[in-house]
Amino acid sequence: MNETRTKLRVCQALFALGAATFVVALALGHPARVWQAFLLNFLFWTGIAQSGVVFAAAYQVSKGQWSDAFRRMGESLVFFLPASLVLFVAMMLFGASSIFVWARTPVADKLVWLNVPFLGTRDLVVFAGLYALSAAYVYYSQRPVLHPEDAERCARRTRVLAPVLLIAFGLGYSLIGFDLVMSLDPSWYSTLFGWYFFVSAFYAALAFLVIAAALFRETWGLEHHLTADATHDMGRLLFGFCLLTGGLFWAQWLVFWYGDLPEEIAFVIRRYYQMPYAPLAWTMTYGAFIVPLVILLSKDLKRKPKRLAAVACWILVMLWLERYIWIVPSIWRGQSAPLLIEALITAGFAGGFLWAWMAYTRRKLIEAPH
Image (cartoon, rainbow, N blue to C red; front, side, top):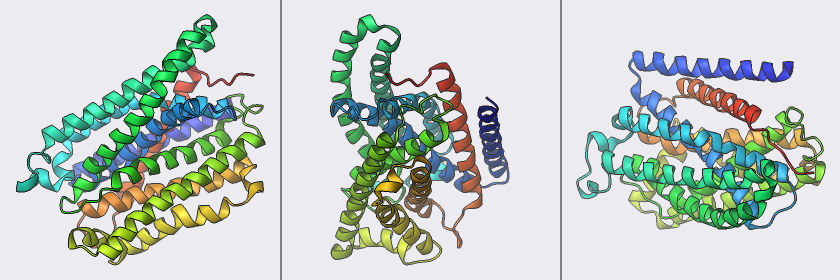
């Protein structure tokens, strides 16, 4: 109990630090940095929450039986999705002019598609639709725990909802990637980016679940369910999505390289071959894909929750840096890479996310069948 209270206090302190940074930076006249950090973290944490539920749905569709505990953990991340709707509306109402260059200087040939009311409305529909599907899926998945007599009806509903959610996630998050990342630089486009965007969000969610399992397995009483075999299976899944995400990254990079088109290559050059972002971009590229790929070859490591969690922490940091590399250079035009305000606001998002998650799981205990 004391350990749980300590974790809650740390999360509360981080949330307070991030909120204070947000307010002070706005007051001091740094709206671009505040809202780019907000967008970065909104996409990062919303992606993890939504992908956690999608992981549970994928487990259902594939008839997985290797760890219901991990499935329940993924389902529990649905708690953040209604909050993300509020955060998105706030960002579009108050931060759109700081985030989107085309909101200040409209692009004539893309005016119909790139305008704040239309973009905000269609993306809100995507987020709300995914939340509704996720909430319905989690409700019918967890209802039999308290109402066993309703198990058959709930199983039928989840069998229908799970594949619908998977398809909606792929389509919806592709659009989100195009709208909230690619459109930041309206002269750049990549038809593969939407796929890469939602797969990398799923990759981040797997890393997050590995970390959570190591941190909270005793708090949730899941020591007998999060076994070495289950940890090993989750490690193999993390390894697989490291390969898949890295493969999509390389496929996109390869097209840029041999195509050498001005509308594509300028985006890459600014990030990988010009200061101040080049060191960060190369660190992210090797750190998110090559380094974990080599480390996760170890079978022994994948069976040790704390060691696997350490690798997952590294992956999560690198994937946060990946979102940073895609978003910040399109908004910030300063001579140095902005990191302090962004890192402090990230700490606030992380603290608030974990604080709310722990409060949610105290009311809705994560259970795994015996």
